[in-house]
Image (cartoon, rainbow, N blue to C red; front, side, top):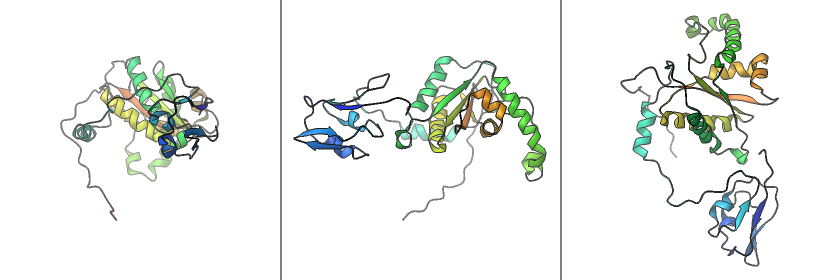
Length: 258
């Protein structure tokens, strides 16, 4: 985590119910004299104690916003969610319509709210819009150099043409998702893609651009990537220029049940 956070328990409002102690994944709370007590500030700062306390006796410092009170928990309609997953497609044809800044902000918010391992909150985002093509050019040069080697081992590569828009497909925006942890970045990317689609946007997962960003020194400099940081995934975003009339067929799930 980037900022320093301190957990505090107000003994005046704590009722010693023990809910925070039982729910703490770090085992960092004990009950003394019928009051909850934090053992150490060396904690993953997951905020479960803040969220579960019925009296709001637990607080954490260092955040830009207070926790939001939960009335009725938000739920998703399972059938609608499955229908959305069933009909989603990778989009490679986009209109010229620009993606509104508020939609970009919503997509990043979906990534920010995605859980991370050990509550690291180590995912960051690079938004490419104005001058997006200048980030594409170094990636094109890199892939043109390695394409002859790929053609030796891949039938698909033999049919591949790397033009000036190979990575972004003339889309108006892309978001590179950066993390030192592959899983944390991938989880954020998945939630961000769902948010983008719920906003009416088409999405392409550009693993190729992510690969280029991690291996091209010039592109790493342009993106401001620090040592140890990697682009886990790049979401190419825009309004779809194509309509699909039916779902794609999928093989049956391979399931092992014990």
